[in-house]
Each structure stands twice: as C-alpha cells, then as structure tokens.
Length: 248
Length: 224
Image 1 (cartoon, chains in turn red, cyan):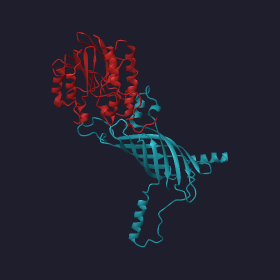
Image 2 (tube, helix red, strand yellow):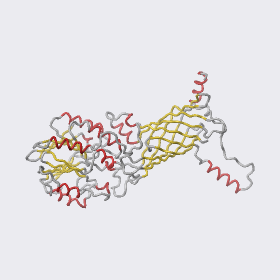
Image 3 (tube, helix red, strand yellow):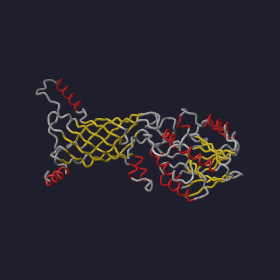
Image 4 (cartoon, chains in turn orange, blue):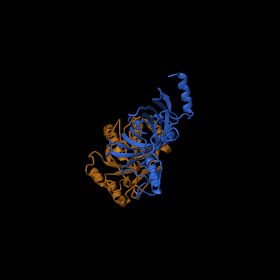
C-alpha cells in the first residue's frame, strides 16, 4: 500500500533472479545432450496473459527453462517489474530475463539490475553457451557501450571448455531503430567468431519473424509479444536445433 | 451532544447550507479610510492582489506516491473552503536507484462535506477527493522524448504522472487569541496513477484495486 513514487526503486522480495536461476539451469543440464527451452517476450502490462503463459508452460514437462526477451515493463516503473517477477516466479522451471528498451525508462534499468541482474549475461546449458545481450542502444545514447563488445570478447576469451556451440539472445535485432546500426556488421562478425553459432532470438517487434538477416545463414527468430498468446519452443539436440511456435 | 441536533447538523452541512462553523476571524488587508490619489489606490490594489496569493495552509505528508516526505503550501477557497489547491515538494531517497530525487506536486482537492463534532472543535470530512500531477526532477525522465528517438516513439511521458485520490480527514479547530494555527487537519489518502488504472482494466484477473491503491498520510496546518 505504501508507495513513495511509481519510480521509487524500492524493492522487496527476491532479487538477483538471473544468477539464481542460471545456477539451477547449469546444474540441471550440465550433461544433457538434448534439452528444450521456451522463449517469451514483451510481456509489458499484459499480466493476465503472462499468468496464462506461465500456467501453459507449467502444464508441460518437456521444458527445461524459459528465456524472457525483455520489455517486462511498459514505463520502467518499479511495481511493473515486481508484478512481472512475481508472476514469472510461478514457473516451475528456472527462467532468465533480458532487458528491453521499455525496461530502461526512468529508474527502470537500475531496478532491472537489482531484481534480475546485469543486462549482459551468459550461461551454459548442455554444450550450448547462451550469450544474452543488451542491444537497446538508443536508450543509452552512447553513455555505455551497447552492444558491449568488451563483454562479447570477454565471453569469447572465457568460453566454457565443455561448451561447443553458441546461441544469442537479445531484445532488438540489428537493423532495428534501437540497435546501434553503425556497428551491426561488426556485431554479426563478432557473433560468427563464437564456436558454432546456432541462431539468434529476439523480441521487440511484437510479431513472429524468421530471417536470415545478413544472408550468411545465421538465423534471427523474433517471438510475438505475449498479447498474441504465443511462445516459442526451441529444442536443442546433437544435430542442431528445432523450433516451433505454440499458441496458448 | 444532542443526537438529534447532530443528525440535523450533518444533514444541513451535507446540503452545503451552513458555512463551516469555525470561521470566527478573517484576516483581511485593511482598506485605508480615504484613498486620496491614483497612486495610493494603485498601491492598495497592488497589495491586495499579492495578499490574495499568500498561502492559507501548509502541509506535511508521508508517502502517497509523491516522495517519502513532502512539504507544501496552498490555498483554500470556495463558499465553505471546500476547494483546495496545494503545491508540494517531495523528497525521494535513492533506494536502489543511482541518486535521490526531488518531486513537485500540484494537487486539486475537493471536500464536499464538513461535519461538526464535539462543540465545533472537531470536524470530520468524510470524503476528500481530487487529482494531482507529479513531476520528478531528474535527467532520467522526460516530458517529451529526447530528439534521439523517432517522433512519437513512446507515446507517453515518464516525467509527469496524473493521479486520482480519495481520502478522509479530521480537523481540530483552535479557539482563543493565542492559537498558533486556525486549525490542524490529519488526513489520509488513497491514490492511483494513470497507467496503474489502465492496467487494472486490461488485467482484471491479475490486478485488484488494492494492488494499485497507495496510501499517504498528512497533516494540514490552516494558517488563516
């Protein structure tokens, strides 16, 4: 009942969600050669639909973890983050959240960092290293490097020994108005320097899309916003990956 | 107090016929008996206009979505002083953000009824309602999005929030020449802001009214 301001950044309850869940993902899937994750994105101010997708994913037993592609909030307000966190905490499987452009508004980025963690992060499931990148360059206006090549090179240098392949998640794709398009070629080049890049997943556009964006075979998959009541499922096996879209 | 009389008073006040009972002394700018020249008239009117701008009350508030603690001043007007306009500055500690912030609030209050209790020393205002606008002083927020964005990229302002509120109040009226204030009012208010309200309607299953209502407590000092 007590609120000092919609952007007061007062947080009660669970924080550092991504790191806590990454431990669960990595422990659960360290020797897996086949696993499956769900991809949801752009759940801002669609709490009912977010609750429904959590229920839909909980009904399945074949999903190992969930990736949220960002835009948990519309205004970047503190309560918006906490409501989304509380709904997503209802997932039986661990989940991680990327930062979306709306999540950067006001004190949003500061709250995101506290509740979920660093906007750039990575984890390993089976032999796939997941590199999750903040690509909302327009929000940062050159105050921070976005996308962060220091982070990407650090990821390359410290690539886990047991990981053999890479998968990239981001909120906005190269070419989008949010992306720093001056470096999109360099970005793509850097992705290709990772061991066996599988594909890229992203949100932001509020519609389904599958594009060979640079014509080099590295596919970019966009998931709809949750209002469309769609989530994607990616199955990773020894041969590569398969994906499907699921309505709920 | 005679119960019948109380009920009668409540009814009369509810109809807005009786003026607020505590008006025993009105401070006004005294008009000199004779205003000789144009200049004197002009100065008198000049003083009178500024006099009207002297705030009639000050407030101290805790929480209420405009800061942890806010102070302000404002004006009471209307036949029964049922209208109030208050300006407040709020202090918002940084918590998990990078820095603390100051906010500014412009608030419009309507108090339809004022019910006397206890020999007119206490009055109850069973309903206060109104709206307020809050702006936050920080370069992280904007009214219109900065130029780097495509035009109309975000169709809202992060800096200015519009709130609606309802509340209740209890006023103690002071008597005697040596009083410091005319009256002191304790109040609480429940408010919600624009996007919470919209979210409530678009998420009938997840959100309840109690999720989007936020309480604030305050004291209003009536100077004159």
